[in-house]
Amino acid sequence: MQTASLPRLMMLLAGLSLAACGDDSDPIKPPENPAPTGLQATATGTNTIQVSWSAPTTPATEFVLHRATGDGDFAEIARPGATATSHADAGLQPGTAYRYRIAAVRSAGTSSFSAIASATTEEEVEDLIVEVTTNITTDTRWTADRTYCLMGFIKVANGATLTIDPGTTIYGDYETLGSSLFVLRGARIVANGTAGNPIVFTSERPVGQRRPGDWGGLIVVGNGIINRSGTVIVEGTATDDVINPAVPYSGGTDNTDNSGTLRYVRVEYAGYAPAQDAELNSFTFAAVGSGTTMEYLQAHNGLDDAFEWFGGAVDGRYLVSYETGDDHFDMSEGYSGRLQYLIAYQSKLLDPRPNAGGVASDPQGFEIDGCGSNAGGGCDNGYNSTPFTSPVVANFTMIGSAAGLVGSSGGYGMVLRRGTAGHYVNGIIAHWPTAAIGYRDAQSKARELDGLLTIQGLYVAETATLFQSGQQQYEGPGEIEHQPATAAATIFSSLPANPANAAEFDWSLAPGVAPRTGGLVIFTGNLAARAGGAIGGTTFRGAADPNGPKWWQGWTTYTDN
Image 1: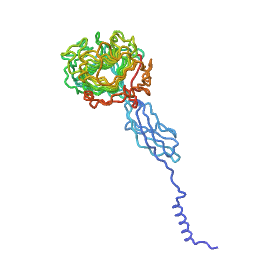
Image 2 (image 1 turned 180 degrees about the horizontal axis):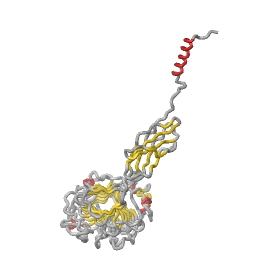
Image 3 (image 1 turned 120 degrees about the horizontal axis):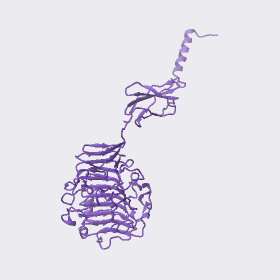
Image 4 (image 1 turned 30 degrees about the horizontal axis):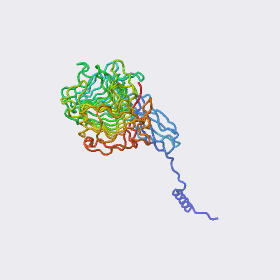
């Protein structure tokens, strides 16, 4: 038998070796062992940080997590299991920076460490309740991690801006009678809440013990124009030269003035009366200009008026009033703003805090005055004083109380009087015991005849009387549909007889009901000029677009106490 020579044998072996190295059908590769990715660290408190990472594509048997304090050395703090993607690191120091890195353990060994993630624990808050005892005269910020307690008549003054973060709660001190927040002329409030985190002004008392009139309210004073001469002061002020001096709002010259922003703000259990028959309101807007933003606001369980405008021209939208001691929406003294999407609901007679003031004998849905009142002077031309009160109010839903809960002069869905003008369109008025509309005097009628006052696209239900007898009767353009036999509860998706919480209200129009149509779509004449681009017509009537969002949900409240 022949055998290959040694050189030939070596050549054959070399060829076999080269063939094996180039054969991809059976590769020999080192095991993969990549470092974890997506490492993140997030402070969750004063002594906790949540660390997370991405699940690896190459499985691990466990992980090795390291931590370093500041610029210090890393040390192992945990060995999370194979399926873990997070670790809660506790027992840390407040206000301290920490760094983290992580490696994966596999059969091939421990991988290299990931990129570093850093986080700083929250600062320790020494006092979660901040007592506000002095006026705010420099720019100030209130944050949601603290609660602020107004200890008296607190003023934002001297051109300062008070910024309030979403979710912040502000109490009116119960013992310091009349505790309230005034934003004076030239100062600003920037209160930008959200639907999920509204800003809440409320009573200091515990839930279950709160009552209307527990504290004062929120008052904003601007540089807008009013129709009264002389020195005119905010009702409820000037009871004490030191503690509660007069707050004037007359003499303004700029209806475009900017007092800041109020968005997603609730005012609850307000309306304390510093003097007899001189209650503060939940919201007071005195000569506030149109540069101010005002939307998604709720007044709840307050004495006197829920919203009151004295002159000025601030616009507003998405306003809610649930239960009040007097009027839901009160406008006077030359107010000329534009309001759209308003809801008012009244079902009971409020029970005020003792000695805080009383409920009114003439509560209404809207009370619109030109110039003049039982007590106020300065209307040099009487009910014809200018500028006329001339709001544009569109898309409102006004639900009134039962008979027996109002005085002899109250119980109207809308009162127009004292030479007022204005346009009231695409609304629903229902369940008012006296009449839908009290249209009171010849001067207001003169505004109608001049085309400065209209009532158009109105739907009136469960209200026996459309216009107060013996007073003016509307004869201008626009349909007013009166359906006295239609129950208010049948108009809406959910209007409970005895509500327990805000979630029970659904102001969406029920399928097939008349207010889904019949709205005034095209504005003309003085209405079109006054509405400008701020308010447009709608095919529907009421505060809820049948095809739109339920804008009142999530941030409003409804409670007894």
